[in-house]
Length: 394
Image 1 (cartoon, rainbow, N blue to C red):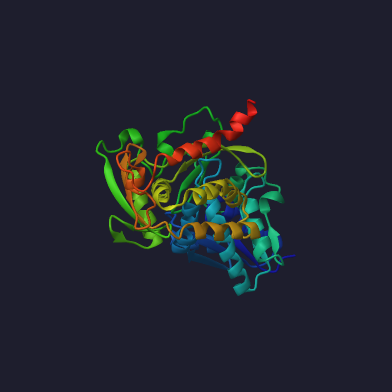
Image 2 (image 1 turned 90 degrees about the horizontal axis):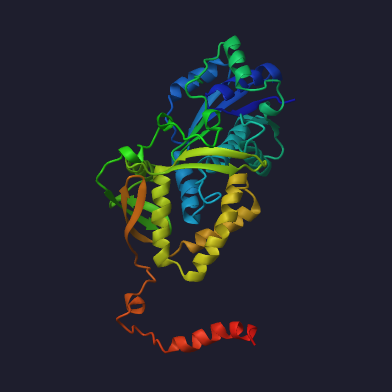
């Protein structure tokens, strides 16, 4: 039986009920740990709520800079997109949250880790695979898999009984996850994939139809694949992403509505807003087009689905992911330069790119110049490429 528990706490309905339930069930101190990843929250109110629910201590960690620099920016470098659409906003946050949770547990002498993920979703796997890699000796408590509550109606009833404020309202009966990289919406009214998401659901981006009628240009500087400046102004990772979020949201950029395959085997509809991240993915790819060797780019593109899958599934700390991570970092040595983009009505258009490491040589590409390339050389090249095709017909 656990002697002290560290709970990954958000202050929402689920984790507030879990906090109280853990205290009553395990009869031991519970530390509520909150990760500040850039979500807009009243941190003092969350702290008061956690203490009122019985937490021995509420620890709030500001992880915004580390989250963006070491997790979001890696995903940008890798071009990571799960099932081609999802930019992994929630998936990238979980390994960082779990790592800091383990650090707090060791610092405070706790022997158990708890999370609020349900038994149907991906987050339970992400948290627990991280725990397995970082703290295999600690007990893991997943209340949704062991208590008798059947759903959120039971949680609301329990919360009212225990005097826990209930943040969920009938008008917005969907689940929201937010950080500096994205906002996600799942469940409730979104469970019918035929129904269009209601416009008033979106908390971040302007509707593309209502976005400005005049396009806006933005320039982004990269150094070794990492964005470092917007319109010539150097910014910290978190502030850079925040700036691009503001620009992208203003122009209705970054909305995605998809049905994805969860790791547990269930198809799930997710609606996402990732304005700054969408801009960065497009800008980074445009710069890679002129700085990466063809075969390096093809190798990297071949690795991308596996990298995205490993992040989505929760294998951030697995040896195969760490090996792939080093490979991606190696490919980014040349990816420095500036990209100019046009933002307009939900779309991002590449308007220009330049780099001191550019492999694009106008003299070679031009139809009007020889540029050290003899067109006669193409004769032998084509004959050799076509040899096996001719053999098939003989």
